[in-house]
Length: 520
Image 1 (spheres, rainbow, N blue to C red):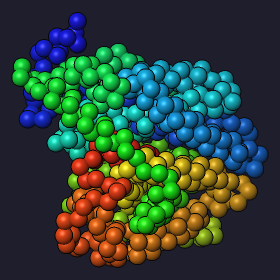
Image 2: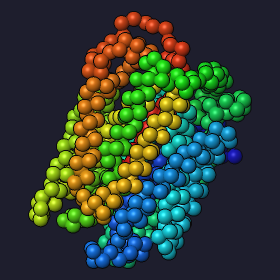
Image 3: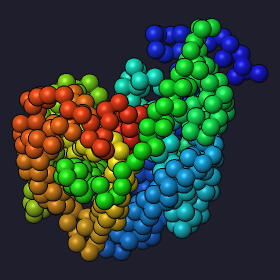
Image 4: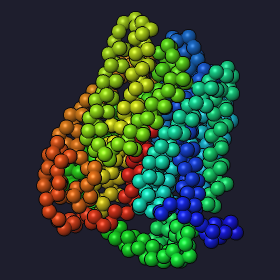
């Protein structure tokens, strides 16, 4: 059997990384690539003229085929409901029957969704197909960060986190390159080809799924100790004397510690009240500052301006976003959360306000329209290091370990509701009946300005601080503007709701999930 052969002939690539670990994370990476590729395909193909002609309707006022505000809204907002269902499904099935089953199931769901979309003959069928695909996106958002965190050694987990974030963004870039080329095709093949390519990644993942073992942590939690030992040996056992049983015992101890959870009421007690409040504000700002404007409607919006090829612009925007991702990966821990947030956040606010201001010009010239397009392309690149990944990391760090599950649920709910509201209302603001166009920049820019004000007084600097340090800092009531230079004054005993030694794979998985769920 191939798995047995790989187990017995595993090789160590670096001190903490083996060949089998690379193979396993590569397969998970294919699934992440699927997520980034398909969401970009969905957002760009809806701006293609043959797609609008087939699934839209004639718009007399604009003398062209397209989508009414209502239909464009439903096409992008309703899938967010199935996204939430996917997260819930993944969590329930994954905890009861294991991560491996969820990995296989979600890629089958993706294939079904792609099949429904590519065979669509009506708007309703396309909407259903997109909703099915977003079930896969939701499952992926829960599963892969969790799965990866449970199989990757702590010493190299940060590196794999970086690749996870980059994988998703890079997939979006590749997808935008594909749609830029196919957009030149004058018939339905312009959107059928990108949808057809979406089949590649889930099929490859299914074919290679045997390379990924069941999570040893989940196996220990289920009482399947021997299976956990086998899984650990497959992943990390490059030497004959690899202590797989000792690793399994350590996991068992960690699982027993993780079983001690706080109550819902604890979220509003003592310093947790402040943590919950500002984590919730951070979750709200990640969506309320307009990421959906760029991710879901960016290509459609640029097409409506009419001065630049929208698909080429989207491709350039994706290149800028890759650069923004690199900034976060390589500098966020070195510069700290607050400095990066203030610089990138200010640029984000200025880009949105400038876009809104240019939209006020009556009978705009070509140069004004080009300025609007430029600001819409700059926005996502500065959003990601500020209101995107930066705030997502902050809200994952701000809560107690023992309240992490409950805090995550609260923050996810707030973030998803804000995302749904923004995504649902944007077509009605951009087009009929409001016809604001680029003036929506004032709305999101205003919220970004309020976010900067909030950050000055209440956003703490949590970089390079242990959980114990964060606990002491909140207990001491350190002002946000002093948290960057604050140092712990003494060693304190962990509070009843926090133990610095219980930072588990699940904690890191939460951080990973928060890092990439703001899809631009």
